[in-house]
Each structure stands twice: as structure tokens, then as C-alpha cells.
Image (tube, rainbow, N blue to C red; front, side, top):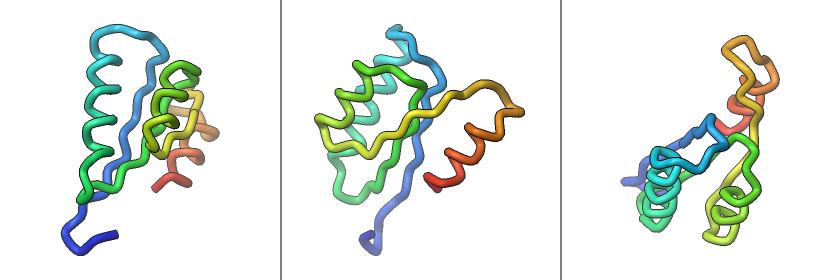
Length: 81
């Protein structure tokens, strides 16, 4: 990581393909192109979105995002920090 860099963990708990999700995709792809940004992304399972990120060299993981009591999601997010 560079001296003047920023680390970002972006999360998307929706698997839909609406306006907000499309904005998230564009923002993630744009931030990933910045040299000073270290980006990791966690999304709800969506094969199309996952492949788009992988094809654009975004570090991406899937998570279930069940609810606020989900220890599985919590542990997966903790691993990405």
C-alpha cells in the first residue's frame, strides 16, 4: 500500500439489478482504477456482478447478508478487513 493511499471496503447487500446497484457497480469499477485506492468489495451472490468485478480485477467476495444477527456474514466481513 502506498503512503498516501486509502483503503475502502465496499458492501452491497442486494442482488438486484436496479438503479442503486448499477451506481454501486460503476462507482466500484471507477474507484478500482485509482492507484491511490486499495479496494475490496463484498456483495450478495450475483453471478453477473461477480464476473464483472473479477473481469475488471476487483477483489470481490460473496456474502449472504442474512440479517444483523448473522455470524456467518459478520465473520466473512471481518476477514476482509
